[in-house]
Amino acid sequence: MNKKVILCVDDEFIILNSLKKELQRYFSDSMTIEIAESGKEGLEAIEFLTSKRKEIVIIISDYIMPNMQGDKFLIEAHKHLPVAMKILLTGEANIEGVTNVINKTNLYRYISKPWDKNDLIMTVESAIEMYESNKQIKLQTRQIQDSIRYAENIQSAILPPQDYLDSCLPNHFIFYRPKDLVSGDFYWCKKINNKVIIAVADCTGHGVPGAFMSLIGHQLLNRTILEKKIYSPDKILENMNKVIGELWSGKQSRTQDGMEIAICVIDEKTKKVDFAGARRPICIVENNELFCVKGDKAAIDGKEGVSYTKHEFELKMDSYVYLYSDGYQDQFGGEKNKRFMSQNLKSLFLNISIKTTKEQLEEVTNTFDNWKENQEQRDDVLVVGIKI
Image (tube, rainbow, N blue to C red; front, side, top):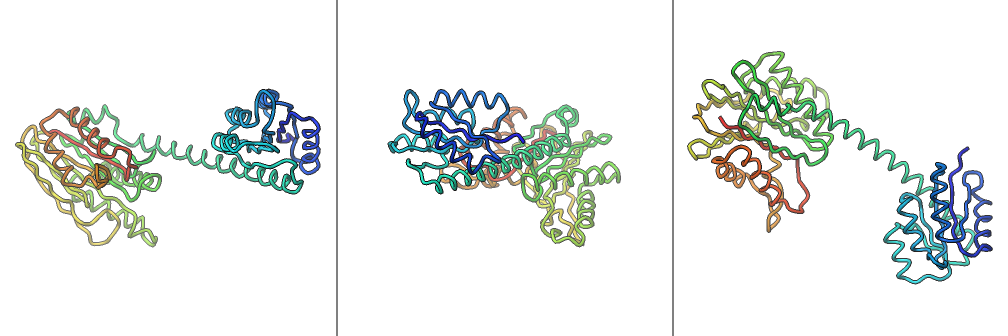
Protein backbone atom coordinates (compact mmCIF):
# COMPACT_ATOMS: atom_id res chain seq x y z
CA MET A 1 0.00 0.00 0.00
CA ASN A 2 1.29 3.47 -0.92
CA LYS A 3 1.19 5.13 2.49
CA LYS A 4 0.56 8.82 2.91
CA VAL A 5 3.10 11.04 4.67
CA ILE A 6 3.32 13.09 7.85
CA LEU A 7 6.34 15.41 7.67
CA CYS A 8 7.88 16.57 10.98
CA VAL A 9 10.38 19.45 11.09
CA ASP A 10 12.43 20.40 14.19
CA ASP A 11 16.03 21.47 14.66
CA GLU A 12 16.43 19.40 17.87
CA PHE A 13 16.98 15.78 16.86
CA ILE A 14 16.00 14.32 20.25
CA ILE A 15 12.61 16.06 20.10
CA LEU A 16 12.22 15.20 16.42
CA ASN A 17 12.97 11.53 17.03
CA SER A 18 10.60 11.44 19.99
CA LEU A 19 7.83 12.97 17.88
CA LYS A 20 8.44 10.48 15.10
CA LYS A 21 8.24 7.48 17.47
CA GLU A 22 5.08 8.84 19.08
CA LEU A 23 3.37 9.18 15.71
CA GLN A 24 4.62 5.83 14.42
CA ARG A 25 3.12 4.10 17.43
CA TYR A 26 -0.35 5.23 16.42
CA PHE A 27 -0.23 5.82 12.66
CA SER A 28 2.35 3.40 11.21
CA ASP A 29 -0.32 1.29 9.54
CA SER A 30 -1.53 4.13 7.34
CA MET A 31 1.19 6.79 7.44
CA THR A 32 4.90 7.13 6.80
CA ILE A 33 6.56 9.55 9.21
CA GLU A 34 9.31 11.61 7.53
CA ILE A 35 11.58 14.05 9.38
CA ALA A 36 13.72 17.09 8.59
CA GLU A 37 16.04 19.04 10.90
CA SER A 38 15.53 22.53 9.44
CA GLY A 39 13.17 24.55 7.31
CA LYS A 40 15.51 24.19 4.34
CA GLU A 41 15.63 20.40 4.74
CA GLY A 42 11.83 20.42 5.13
CA LEU A 43 11.39 22.16 1.76
CA GLU A 44 13.87 19.76 0.15
CA ALA A 45 11.91 16.83 1.64
CA ILE A 46 8.67 18.22 0.21
CA GLU A 47 10.25 18.56 -3.23
CA PHE A 48 11.66 15.03 -3.10
CA LEU A 49 8.49 13.38 -1.75
CA THR A 50 6.21 15.11 -4.25
CA SER A 51 8.55 14.11 -7.09
CA LYS A 52 8.05 10.50 -5.94
CA ARG A 53 4.26 11.08 -5.97
CA LYS A 54 4.04 10.79 -2.20
CA GLU A 55 0.97 12.42 -0.70
CA ILE A 56 1.88 14.67 2.23
CA VAL A 57 -1.13 14.97 4.48
CA ILE A 58 0.24 16.84 7.52
CA ILE A 59 3.23 19.08 8.15
CA ILE A 60 4.23 19.52 11.82
CA SER A 61 6.83 22.20 12.38
CA ASP A 62 8.71 23.69 15.32
CA TYR A 63 8.65 27.49 15.50
CA ILE A 64 12.13 28.42 16.76
CA MET A 65 14.68 27.14 14.22
CA PRO A 66 17.91 28.67 12.90
CA ASN A 67 18.02 30.38 9.47
CA MET A 68 14.35 29.76 8.73
CA GLN A 69 11.80 29.92 11.51
CA GLY A 70 8.71 27.73 11.54
CA ASP A 71 6.26 30.39 10.36
CA LYS A 72 8.36 31.20 7.29
CA PHE A 73 8.88 27.49 6.56
CA LEU A 74 5.15 26.74 6.76
CA ILE A 75 4.36 29.71 4.52
CA GLU A 76 6.80 28.40 1.89
CA ALA A 77 5.51 24.85 2.34
CA HIS A 78 1.94 26.10 1.88
CA LYS A 79 2.85 27.42 -1.57
CA HIS A 80 3.77 23.88 -2.62
CA LEU A 81 1.13 22.02 -0.60
CA PRO A 82 -1.86 24.30 0.00
CA VAL A 83 -4.16 21.39 0.92
CA ALA A 84 -1.83 19.77 3.48
CA MET A 85 -2.75 20.38 7.11
CA LYS A 86 -0.23 22.53 9.02
CA ILE A 87 0.47 22.22 12.74
CA LEU A 88 2.81 24.52 14.65
CA LEU A 89 4.54 22.76 17.55
CA THR A 90 6.70 24.92 19.83
CA GLY A 91 7.51 26.06 23.31
CA GLU A 92 8.29 29.62 22.24
CA ALA A 93 6.38 31.68 19.73
CA ASN A 94 5.38 35.31 19.52
CA ILE A 95 1.82 36.30 18.72
CA GLU A 96 2.90 38.04 15.51
CA GLY A 97 4.55 34.88 14.19
CA VAL A 98 1.57 32.65 15.02
CA THR A 99 -0.85 35.18 13.50
CA ASN A 100 1.31 35.36 10.40
CA VAL A 101 1.23 31.62 9.83
CA ILE A 102 -2.50 31.42 10.59
CA ASN A 103 -3.30 34.08 8.01
CA LYS A 104 -1.00 32.80 5.30
CA THR A 105 -1.22 29.01 5.63
CA ASN A 106 -4.65 28.34 7.12
CA LEU A 107 -2.90 26.82 10.15
CA TYR A 108 -4.87 23.89 11.55
CA ARG A 109 -3.57 23.94 15.13
CA TYR A 110 -0.93 25.37 17.44
CA ILE A 111 0.38 22.96 20.11
CA SER A 112 2.69 23.96 22.94
CA LYS A 113 5.79 22.06 24.00
CA PRO A 114 6.05 19.84 25.89
CA TRP A 115 3.05 18.33 24.17
CA ASP A 116 0.42 16.22 25.82
CA LYS A 117 0.47 12.81 24.13
CA ASN A 118 -3.30 12.45 23.95
CA ASP A 119 -3.71 15.99 22.68
CA LEU A 120 -1.09 15.40 19.99
CA ILE A 121 -2.66 12.15 18.78
CA MET A 122 -6.18 13.57 18.80
CA THR A 123 -4.99 16.62 16.88
CA VAL A 124 -3.26 14.52 14.22
CA GLU A 125 -6.27 12.20 13.92
CA SER A 126 -8.66 15.10 13.45
CA ALA A 127 -6.25 16.74 10.97
CA ILE A 128 -6.17 13.55 8.90
CA GLU A 129 -9.98 13.40 8.94
CA MET A 130 -10.18 17.06 7.92
CA TYR A 131 -7.68 16.50 5.11
CA GLU A 132 -9.64 13.55 3.70
CA SER A 133 -12.91 15.46 4.05
CA ASN A 134 -11.46 18.48 2.24
CA LYS A 135 -10.04 16.21 -0.43
CA GLN A 136 -13.45 14.62 -1.01
CA ILE A 137 -15.15 17.99 -1.13
CA LYS A 138 -12.57 19.24 -3.60
CA LEU A 139 -13.10 16.16 -5.78
CA GLN A 140 -16.87 16.60 -5.69
CA THR A 141 -16.52 20.31 -6.42
CA ARG A 142 -14.29 19.57 -9.41
CA GLN A 143 -16.78 17.00 -10.70
CA ILE A 144 -19.62 19.48 -10.31
CA GLN A 145 -17.60 22.20 -12.05
CA ASP A 146 -16.74 19.81 -14.88
CA SER A 147 -20.41 18.95 -15.25
CA ILE A 148 -21.37 22.63 -15.28
CA ARG A 149 -18.72 23.40 -17.89
CA TYR A 150 -20.06 20.55 -19.99
CA ALA A 151 -23.56 21.98 -19.57
CA GLU A 152 -22.17 25.37 -20.58
CA ASN A 153 -20.78 23.85 -23.77
CA ILE A 154 -24.13 22.23 -24.53
CA GLN A 155 -26.00 25.47 -23.90
CA SER A 156 -23.56 27.45 -26.04
CA ALA A 157 -24.02 24.93 -28.83
CA ILE A 158 -27.80 25.41 -28.95
CA LEU A 159 -27.61 29.20 -29.18
CA PRO A 160 -27.68 30.49 -32.78
CA PRO A 161 -24.18 31.03 -34.19
CA GLN A 162 -23.22 34.66 -34.72
CA ASP A 163 -22.79 34.31 -38.48
CA TYR A 164 -26.29 32.81 -38.78
CA LEU A 165 -27.75 35.66 -36.71
CA ASP A 166 -25.96 38.16 -38.93
CA SER A 167 -27.48 36.56 -42.03
CA CYS A 168 -30.99 36.65 -40.51
CA LEU A 169 -30.71 40.01 -38.77
CA PRO A 170 -27.99 42.14 -40.41
CA ASN A 171 -28.48 44.96 -37.89
CA HIS A 172 -28.88 43.63 -34.38
CA PHE A 173 -27.15 43.35 -31.03
CA ILE A 174 -27.36 40.84 -28.20
CA PHE A 175 -26.32 41.65 -24.65
CA TYR A 176 -26.11 38.27 -22.92
CA ARG A 177 -24.74 38.12 -19.39
CA PRO A 178 -25.46 34.87 -17.47
CA LYS A 179 -25.30 35.15 -13.69
CA ASP A 180 -23.43 31.83 -13.51
CA LEU A 181 -21.57 29.72 -16.05
CA VAL A 182 -24.88 28.52 -17.41
CA SER A 183 -28.03 30.53 -17.81
CA GLY A 184 -31.81 30.37 -17.57
CA ASP A 185 -32.08 33.05 -20.26
CA PHE A 186 -31.70 32.05 -23.89
CA TYR A 187 -32.46 33.31 -27.38
CA TRP A 188 -33.60 31.42 -30.48
CA CYS A 189 -33.73 32.46 -34.12
CA LYS A 190 -34.74 30.87 -37.44
CA LYS A 191 -35.30 32.23 -40.92
CA ILE A 192 -38.14 30.53 -42.77
CA ASN A 193 -38.74 31.77 -46.30
CA ASN A 194 -38.95 35.56 -45.99
CA LYS A 195 -39.73 35.58 -42.29
CA VAL A 196 -37.39 35.71 -39.31
CA ILE A 197 -38.68 34.25 -36.05
CA ILE A 198 -36.80 35.28 -32.93
CA ALA A 199 -37.51 34.37 -29.32
CA VAL A 200 -36.10 35.74 -26.07
CA ALA A 201 -36.83 33.58 -23.04
CA ASP A 202 -36.34 33.77 -19.28
CA CYS A 203 -36.66 30.37 -17.62
CA THR A 204 -37.43 29.66 -13.98
CA GLY A 205 -34.29 30.15 -11.90
CA HIS A 206 -30.73 30.63 -13.09
CA GLY A 207 -27.60 28.49 -13.08
CA VAL A 208 -28.03 24.76 -13.62
CA PRO A 209 -31.82 24.53 -12.99
CA GLY A 210 -32.48 27.44 -15.33
CA ALA A 211 -30.11 25.99 -17.93
CA PHE A 212 -31.93 22.66 -17.99
CA MET A 213 -35.22 24.50 -18.43
CA SER A 214 -33.68 26.50 -21.27
CA LEU A 215 -32.77 23.25 -23.05
CA ILE A 216 -36.42 22.20 -22.78
CA GLY A 217 -37.52 25.59 -24.10
CA HIS A 218 -35.12 25.38 -27.04
CA GLN A 219 -36.38 21.92 -27.95
CA LEU A 220 -40.01 23.05 -27.68
CA LEU A 221 -39.35 25.91 -30.10
CA ASN A 222 -37.71 23.50 -32.55
CA ARG A 223 -40.60 21.06 -32.42
CA THR A 224 -43.30 23.72 -32.56
CA ILE A 225 -41.84 25.80 -35.37
CA LEU A 226 -39.63 23.47 -37.40
CA GLU A 227 -41.56 20.20 -37.06
CA LYS A 228 -45.16 21.34 -36.59
CA LYS A 229 -44.62 24.41 -38.80
CA ILE A 230 -46.50 26.77 -36.53
CA TYR A 231 -45.39 30.30 -37.39
CA SER A 232 -47.87 32.58 -35.62
CA PRO A 233 -46.30 33.77 -32.33
CA ASP A 234 -49.47 33.34 -30.26
CA LYS A 235 -49.98 29.79 -31.53
CA ILE A 236 -46.32 28.98 -30.91
CA LEU A 237 -46.75 29.96 -27.25
CA GLU A 238 -49.98 28.01 -26.93
CA ASN A 239 -48.39 24.85 -28.29
CA MET A 240 -45.36 25.23 -26.04
CA ASN A 241 -47.60 25.70 -23.01
CA LYS A 242 -49.64 22.62 -23.94
CA VAL A 243 -46.52 20.43 -24.26
CA ILE A 244 -45.10 21.78 -20.97
CA GLY A 245 -48.38 20.80 -19.33
CA GLU A 246 -48.01 17.28 -20.68
CA LEU A 247 -44.43 17.10 -19.40
CA TRP A 248 -45.39 18.36 -15.95
CA SER A 249 -48.54 16.24 -15.71
CA GLY A 250 -48.70 14.60 -12.27
CA LYS A 251 -45.53 16.33 -11.05
CA GLN A 252 -45.37 18.69 -8.08
CA SER A 253 -43.35 21.21 -10.09
CA ARG A 254 -46.13 21.74 -12.59
CA THR A 255 -47.18 25.15 -11.27
CA GLN A 256 -43.65 26.31 -10.50
CA ASP A 257 -41.33 25.56 -13.41
CA GLY A 258 -41.64 27.21 -16.78
CA MET A 259 -40.55 30.27 -18.69
CA GLU A 260 -41.43 33.78 -19.72
CA ILE A 261 -40.89 34.35 -23.40
CA ALA A 262 -41.31 36.97 -26.11
CA ILE A 263 -41.61 35.89 -29.76
CA CYS A 264 -41.37 38.12 -32.83
CA VAL A 265 -42.07 37.16 -36.43
CA ILE A 266 -40.51 39.72 -38.77
CA ASP A 267 -41.54 39.80 -42.44
CA GLU A 268 -38.51 41.00 -44.36
CA LYS A 269 -40.52 42.18 -47.37
CA THR A 270 -43.42 44.00 -45.73
CA LYS A 271 -41.61 45.03 -42.51
CA LYS A 272 -44.61 43.69 -40.62
CA VAL A 273 -43.85 42.46 -37.10
CA ASP A 274 -46.08 39.99 -35.28
CA PHE A 275 -45.52 39.67 -31.55
CA ALA A 276 -46.82 37.56 -28.69
CA GLY A 277 -45.46 37.42 -25.18
CA ALA A 278 -45.83 35.19 -22.18
CA ARG A 279 -45.12 37.72 -19.41
CA ARG A 280 -42.47 39.41 -21.53
CA PRO A 281 -42.96 42.68 -23.44
CA ILE A 282 -41.80 44.21 -26.68
CA CYS A 283 -40.50 47.77 -26.98
CA ILE A 284 -40.44 49.57 -30.33
CA VAL A 285 -38.82 52.87 -31.26
CA GLU A 286 -40.25 54.46 -34.42
CA ASN A 287 -39.79 58.08 -35.53
CA ASN A 288 -37.93 58.73 -32.27
CA GLU A 289 -40.96 57.67 -30.25
CA LEU A 290 -41.07 54.69 -27.89
CA PHE A 291 -44.04 52.45 -27.30
CA CYS A 292 -44.15 49.14 -25.48
CA VAL A 293 -46.67 46.31 -25.43
CA LYS A 294 -46.89 43.96 -22.49
CA GLY A 295 -47.11 40.24 -22.96
CA ASP A 296 -49.99 38.23 -21.56
CA LYS A 297 -49.97 37.54 -17.82
CA ALA A 298 -49.76 33.78 -18.31
CA ALA A 299 -46.28 32.21 -18.41
CA ILE A 300 -45.36 29.01 -20.22
CA ASP A 301 -45.93 26.68 -17.29
CA GLY A 302 -48.50 24.13 -18.43
CA LYS A 303 -51.66 25.69 -17.02
CA GLU A 304 -54.74 24.61 -18.94
CA GLY A 305 -57.10 26.88 -20.87
CA VAL A 306 -54.47 29.53 -21.58
CA SER A 307 -54.37 31.55 -24.79
CA TYR A 308 -52.02 34.32 -25.90
CA THR A 309 -52.58 37.52 -27.83
CA LYS A 310 -51.00 38.31 -31.18
CA HIS A 311 -50.07 41.95 -31.78
CA GLU A 312 -49.37 43.17 -35.32
CA PHE A 313 -47.20 46.17 -36.19
CA GLU A 314 -46.57 47.79 -39.58
CA LEU A 315 -43.20 49.37 -38.98
CA LYS A 316 -41.25 51.86 -41.03
CA MET A 317 -37.67 51.43 -42.11
CA ASP A 318 -35.04 52.12 -39.43
CA SER A 319 -37.41 51.32 -36.56
CA TYR A 320 -35.98 49.33 -33.66
CA VAL A 321 -37.44 46.38 -31.78
CA TYR A 322 -36.20 45.46 -28.29
CA LEU A 323 -36.84 42.17 -26.49
CA TYR A 324 -35.42 41.42 -23.04
CA SER A 325 -35.57 39.33 -19.88
CA ASP A 326 -36.13 40.97 -16.50
CA GLY A 327 -32.53 40.62 -15.30
CA TYR A 328 -31.37 44.04 -16.52
CA GLN A 329 -34.13 46.07 -14.89
CA ASP A 330 -33.95 44.05 -11.65
CA GLN A 331 -30.23 44.59 -11.15
CA PHE A 332 -29.34 46.44 -7.94
CA GLY A 333 -26.82 49.25 -8.10
CA GLY A 334 -26.38 53.00 -8.37
CA GLU A 335 -25.70 55.40 -5.50
CA LYS A 336 -28.66 54.16 -3.44
CA ASN A 337 -28.30 50.49 -4.35
CA LYS A 338 -31.74 50.21 -5.93
CA ARG A 339 -33.11 48.30 -8.89
CA PHE A 340 -32.41 49.75 -12.33
CA MET A 341 -36.17 49.58 -13.05
CA SER A 342 -38.15 49.03 -16.25
CA GLN A 343 -38.71 52.73 -16.93
CA ASN A 344 -34.98 53.45 -16.98
CA LEU A 345 -34.42 50.57 -19.38
CA LYS A 346 -37.10 51.91 -21.72
CA SER A 347 -35.51 55.37 -21.59
CA LEU A 348 -32.21 53.75 -22.44
CA PHE A 349 -33.76 52.13 -25.52
CA LEU A 350 -35.10 55.48 -26.71
CA ASN A 351 -31.79 57.26 -26.13
CA ILE A 352 -29.67 54.70 -27.97
CA SER A 353 -32.04 54.14 -30.91
CA ILE A 354 -30.33 56.84 -32.97
CA LYS A 355 -27.02 54.97 -32.78
CA THR A 356 -25.65 51.98 -34.69
CA THR A 357 -26.26 48.53 -33.25
CA LYS A 358 -22.58 48.26 -32.35
CA GLU A 359 -22.77 51.53 -30.43
CA GLN A 360 -26.04 50.44 -28.82
CA LEU A 361 -24.42 47.26 -27.51
CA GLU A 362 -21.57 49.30 -26.03
CA GLU A 363 -24.04 51.66 -24.38
CA VAL A 364 -26.18 48.85 -22.95
CA THR A 365 -23.07 47.07 -21.66
CA ASN A 366 -21.48 50.16 -20.10
CA THR A 367 -24.74 51.30 -18.51
CA PHE A 368 -25.22 47.90 -16.88
CA ASP A 369 -21.64 47.66 -15.63
CA ASN A 370 -21.61 51.23 -14.31
CA TRP A 371 -24.91 50.67 -12.52
CA LYS A 372 -23.92 47.33 -11.01
CA GLU A 373 -20.34 48.30 -10.13
CA ASN A 374 -19.28 45.98 -7.29
CA GLN A 375 -22.75 44.62 -6.54
CA GLU A 376 -23.42 40.94 -7.11
CA GLN A 377 -25.26 40.22 -10.34
CA ARG A 378 -28.82 39.41 -9.33
CA ASP A 379 -30.04 37.35 -12.30
CA ASP A 380 -29.28 36.29 -15.85
CA VAL A 381 -29.45 39.23 -18.24
CA LEU A 382 -30.50 39.22 -21.89
CA VAL A 383 -31.33 42.18 -24.15
CA VAL A 384 -31.82 41.91 -27.92
CA GLY A 385 -32.10 44.92 -30.22
CA ILE A 386 -33.12 44.59 -33.88
CA LYS A 387 -33.18 47.23 -36.60
CA ILE A 388 -36.06 46.81 -39.06
